[in-house]
Length: 343
Image (cartoon, rainbow, N blue to C red; front, side, top):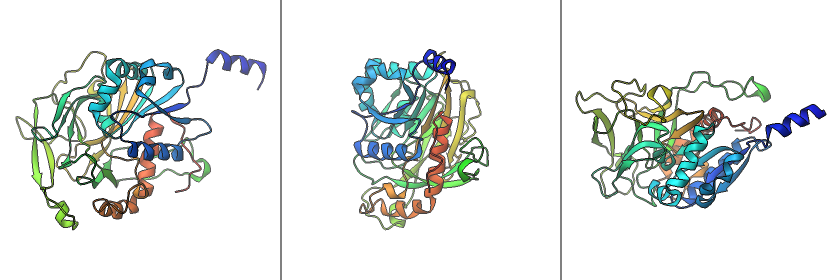
């Protein structure tokens, strides 16, 4: 490197290379441990470091100067709201609008939607507007239920369809033998997630469809399992995954519009195939939001948990697909991925 290159690097300022994973109230430690482990496996650690960040550090905002990605994983979004408050949430919002990247998984995706409806009219109901509004519509869940906190009672392996242009390519060129892969459908770990709804509140309703998931898998159950279907209030039309804007969506001037949303994966087993994973343009930045725990493969789950055993049996044949999708999501967010990782 000559003197001119050194001068250019100095003028450019410090490289934005740190991936920050939120750790605090609202984030489950078990989920965070898996998320941290998988990020360290799949990102290029010669370029990026992966670090936890507290609510207090988030509020102070010094992290913005060196962050390349801010991540919030599974947990409960009311805890996030309480811990981060308007100030911390605003720091994340400004960071992304000014060119940063955000990855929200499960509760991190609820937290980043314009509004949420979780277990509406049920014992765990949480409904309301949200501040980040990276996704310009609602997040409605749990799509499969009933959900129970601190339990995998309502967890499943769900079938997703990829809307990503095929074949997928994880690198520029096919270095290190990493060739483009075709990926149509795969199973992913679901626990309390929802569907992304492009319609404003009041323009749709949820329809509960009872099923026999626990009985079919020989699982103990005191409650009836079900899935929910999202339908238009007027014509009972299922909400399709293509997110065509049939009605105008009310969102603040600074928020994304419907044309800024790209569906990456949709639920194959739900009528209308609602979106499960979306990519959103947000100002100069971007966000990828996932309703399913795509960071989990079969080896991340506890095989001693009776409710997880059938999920593990299903996921173990899709570990390769899981890793491809997760790395593709990271690539969408500008992260350099680990091309040498052996599946």
